[in-house]
Figure 1 (cartoon, one colour):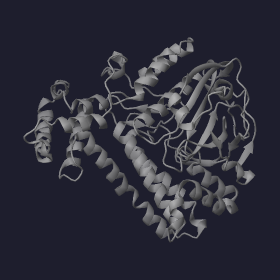
Figure 2 (figure 1 turned 45 degrees about the vertical axis):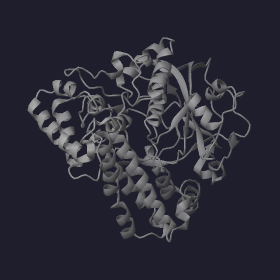
Figure 3 (figure 1 turned 30 degrees about the horizontal axis):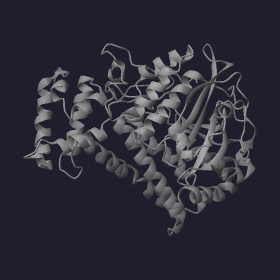
Figure 4 (figure 1 turned 60 degrees about the vertical axis):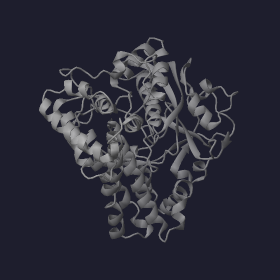
Amino acid sequence: MQIDNRYAQLDPRLYHRQMPEPLKNPVAVHFNPLVAAELDWPADWDWLAIVAGQTVPDGFAPLAMAYAGHQFGQWAGQLGDGRGLLLAQVRDRNQRLTDLHLKGAGLTPYSRMGDGRAVLRSSIREYLAGHALNCLGIASSNALGLVSSDTPVQRETLERGAAVLRVADSHIRLGHFEWINRFAPELLKPFTDHVIEQYYPECKLAESPYLAFAAAVIDRTAQMIADWQLVGFAHGVMNTDNLSITGSTLDFGPFGFLERFVPDWINNHSDQQGRYVYQNQPSIAHWNLWVWLGQLLRLDLNKEDLQTALATFEPLFLQYYGAGLAAKLGLSAEQDGVFELGMQFLNLLKAEKLDYTNSFRFLSGDWLKLRDDCIDVAAFDRFATDYQALIVQHGDRGNDGAERRQAMNRANPCYVLRNQMAQTAIEQAEAGDFSEVDRLFWLLATPFDIQPERERPADRQPPELDQALVEVSCSS
């Protein structure tokens, strides 16, 4: 494995070098062989000792990043890695720069009122969520390994300390630029040059590299949000310090995958106003980008050009989302009426509170099952008539549509990480049984394939209609 610590070569005001604080009596919860293969992880390295903070391999340069941000729409001031360390940057087997970031590594100068630790329940959720999104084809951080320990951590109750070794293309956030602009503005140009060099080298050839960089970040963010919406993923805490500069999903806290289609479901217990609900994610991403673009004015960019760049976000999002929605329907985004049909279907799901993932999957085969789930059968029949007309227009006339249905099954997963699935794995892990973490890991590794030998009924079962929707605590 090739170590390439580029971030550690930047101005030292941007970080604080320190070693992790080891966990007591660490226990292996899970190791990700898929990520290990991508990294060419050395077989003779003791991953458990590394994730537990007991061993730091030669060449690693642990540091806590400084950044700032807007949280729930308000300036939050200096933030930073309060319980995490960028252990090292490495080149993966395709020579892509990759961060190894240890979460739960102990106190740092940026911990504020925190204790620098992570607990087992939230670490399991993050470990499985990053894996799930990656296997769904969505840009996201992942993780190499997860450990539990005897280190006590006080939250609402006393819990087990844990750590997860996160793997991502970058841990640089929109909030890094906010910190620099407020506290070290002279670093803005060299820092932005670094980001372009490492993550957007194609922008160097543009007439205005910084403006091209802004446009590229907007584009990647639009695609990430569209991908979230298409699988029903609600991040739950889209603060500017939780959005990556590369358009990859970062910082799993009170996230949730929609089950019954309630687009204004508040999945974050702390989000009392519903700012970060699923249906708001495109507009919040636009707002976050607006805040971020303001940090670039010092790079001799004018406001009008940045406004023009930001104006591309909505059409880009609609382009990505529209193409993905058409694929989920087995149709072409260029067909007239396809987007409107998708909205008709979503309105049906919302009115009936049907399961988002299951309902799209039923479209490739079990229409009667979907119809039986509807109270307003006439509304479903109107949708089905309109849908059938577009299918015929698409070119299924004269064949059984097998190719279209196969394509739909590659766009509509059977499995997402439902809350009850994660909760069951957590409860068993807290009792010392990590087998459910392993089962879910492999189930979610191939989410588009039906796995009767591995799945359990709860893996595709939505909550009862009268069951209260879960709000996940930010406490982690």
